[in-house]
Image (cartoon, rainbow, N blue to C red; front, side, top):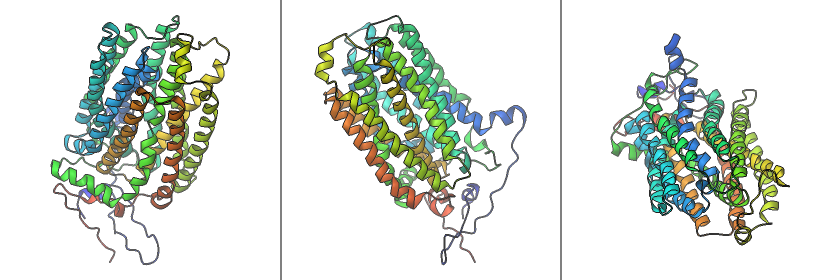
Length: 487
């Protein structure tokens, strides 16, 4: 067995009579540093810094998108920009695991965060020059490439730093800090637009977002090298490999070939950004004025923090086996999908694109009758989103502890997620009827859960074993070392 395979922290176990398992050398336990170094190299500190990168960049992007139409009166440009964004995101993310493993996660994060300032700046340009729509769409395409790198590096680090018993809470912590970006951004927007009854945000909102995303771009420079990280149980995080591009592209194929159950999560991945189009543009953007949209946006991202932390605590509850926790999360998601969409159907059936256009500027304000029920519905949309994304990440983390493999898995996740998003944002721009988009959202979420169920049954184990980790045994030349057999 290769030397780096012995640094993974995997447990060999008998799975039944006649099975052969590796005699895995117990992993060395290292002394964690103390004082400031102990704080800096603490996995919780590093996942918090990772959260702040996403707080400043994709968090504020989410806040802007959550206003509906990117804060613009006409949502068509925003929908086309998002379609371009997610198309390039899908293409880049599929190979972003290889980029991350060659360049290293810190450089990948740095490059990935750079596109968010350009995108937000393009909306400022659109406010100043109404005919700058082509620039917004081009900025969206550039951001898609950057986002593919950022989210792949983020997923790899977030799932590699915790021990197996901490993955749920680490995902929850990251998701909470990340969504604080949406909360802060929505708060800024609400404060600046509270006395406005119009339908478009001012320049000040875009300028504030632009400054914050610029700060977020430099945070990766201050993050620790992953190979210096020691987990809370004293085990080392795998030293990042920097193989050739040829080896990494081959590793992408190996990840799929040796762990084909990941394919059963692809429908769940595909649905995981599909619902944003209806929620942001076809509900929040269609029904409410800018003051109500801003308040809705604020509570949506606040509810995300509650949703991610609550499901994360369940997924790490050690009184239950890991398999039991996986099935419990599946049941909760199934119930939430139907509760949210049955509720949403009773709103969607009462309006169409034609009826919204006929109403003109007569959109719902926060003081109007019926607003309270509608904002509560939006809170539950945020809860479902956070629970869905957290569970998807946790399931990938239950399949592997190897950062190289997790980089490929999260690359698959963001690629397939973005392919779905590109299609539905373009559908919204065409424009498809609101009800069609709503029903497709409901159907895809249910399908994602149905396909994930056999994967949970067959692939989620109570401990990750080295026998399932081909990439953990792969060296820099692409050779997969065999396991040592029991004698």
